[in-house]
Image (cartoon, rainbow, N blue to C red; front, side, top):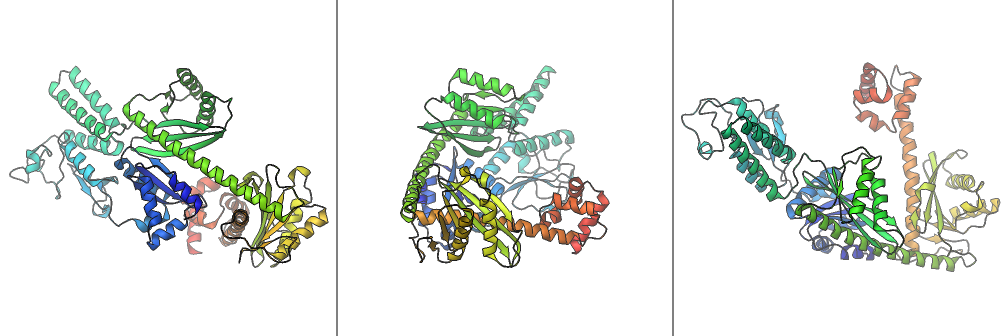
Amino acid sequence: MNANILNEIQQLPDKTGVYLFMNKDGECIYVGKAKSILKRVLQHYSSKDIKERQLISEVETIQFILTPNEVEALILEQRKISELEPKYNVCFKDDKSYPYIKITSSEKYPRMLIVRKLKVGEDSTAEFIGPFSNIEDLKRTFNYLRSFFPLANCKNKIVENSRKRPCLQYNIRRCPAPCFQNIDSGEYSKSVEYMKMFFKGGGGDLLNRLENEMKQAASKLEFEKAALMRDRFFAVSRILESRRVRPAGEGEVHFITLVREYNDALIGVLSVNSEGIANQEYYKFKVNDFNADSEIYEAFITRLYFNSTRKPIKIVVDTVDDNLISLLNQLLALTESDMEVAYYSSNLEKEYLTLLSEATTAEFKRHIMRELSDRRKLEEFIKTLNTLFPNYNFDKQPLRIEAFDISNIKGEHSVGSKVVFLNGYPFKKDYRMYRIKTVEGQNDYGMLREVLNRRFKKITSEEIPDLIVVDGGKGQLNIALEVLNSIGLNIPVVGLAKEKEEIYTPFSKESLTFPEDSSFRKILQYIRDEAHRFAVNYHRKLRSKNFLKSIIDKIPGLSERVKKRIRLAYADLETLREDSAEDIVKKLGVSYNLAVKIKESLSKL
């Protein structure tokens, strides 16, 4: 276990929630739930299982979201797996399917059944709601609600008046027994609709409807119906309260908390909807002692919610400053939306805010630890540079490093890349891609020479990097020195060869080797790999576009105008194949018949 990950784990909370393993590209590769996130993650790292070892070998960072209980952790885990599709969850999950509610909508008296598999072919008109994460909770809720909204759930299709006496479900008031007696099909359909509203929406809309119908019945002096609606209303309310989940139909609520120390501030945002916790995000700010909390909140609210599609109906903040809350509401009023800022108004909101505060504090500590670790690495890196290049000053801030790489396959679609790092962090604004123009065939040296010439011939004094890194060994290093000398630039250059991770400098005939855990070697590898990744991505893009062009040239009857539209609208052939004829019509502005012709031609090629 490397030191960075060990520090990450030590800062994890010993609380219930969901954790996400992220790889070096920022992709989520595994989602898990735990009663104790800290203990569960430690189990992953102490396991000797081959799959577990493969998983943790790819983990670069660990994220987490705290939940009020294990049930919400389970629900959130399934939502994140469905949303992110992490590759290792497929390996580690068992084959037990999650339950659904099946509604046989083709029948006069539709039945509602709890099923494990979606056998849609048996009943093409059947409707399915789900999946649900907890079968026991689903059964309890389903059977409880049927006492107030009686429905049939027989395994056999219902035939009217086919029984001489009703079954036990009728006697315990869970079924109106349409197989035994004539019942009002309209009232039965209402019960089906009520149940669908609950399981689809979580109960909020159903509560509102029951309350309205109760009031209407009372105003018409239909007291029996009003009493029935009252009982149903309280039954649904009890379930929602016991689940401690906010009723649906209200929209999304965002909880916001602020943690700050010295010049760093971290804002946590927790999104909660009818199904519970939806997402958790963090936003970092650089502040100073003169910035009050109110300024940070104001800047953040303006940044996140103005000119944005994010429109929660309520924003709960962790401050009791009435003046600030009033100001924030005035700001949101300018967005012409129904968003409202408030302090927590219920125990449930208080608990969500507390969970978010704990999670944000833990994340802030981890953030500070990472910054300290990165700072130490940078200091060691600069110290080594000063040793290797004693005639240069690397102590000025920020330290600018530029790295170059070449990518091609047998000299075709040749490209070069430039990536820029400031104080050890990528500065993507200054990334550049170069399409090779003057070199043909497999000539990596010539391509590197072209890219460096194009980069440095028109350079200004403000753009001169403190260090240049080239992907390769002595040959690539000499090309870089030759180009710089011809232009009259004196910039230190380092070459890093992939095979043995050997480092080359102008002042040493032999390559230099550094230990694997050396900060100098790690930072150079990170920069070199980023340049390589950037070049390869551009190379793939060019190859894909060229392949697309060659394929569309084979489709008969396409005008040059339509071919040009295809090349502009589609980056690769795969996307064009996946789009429907309707999508092609929208993107290209062509007739439906021509879109169908394009689809048919692609399927034959």
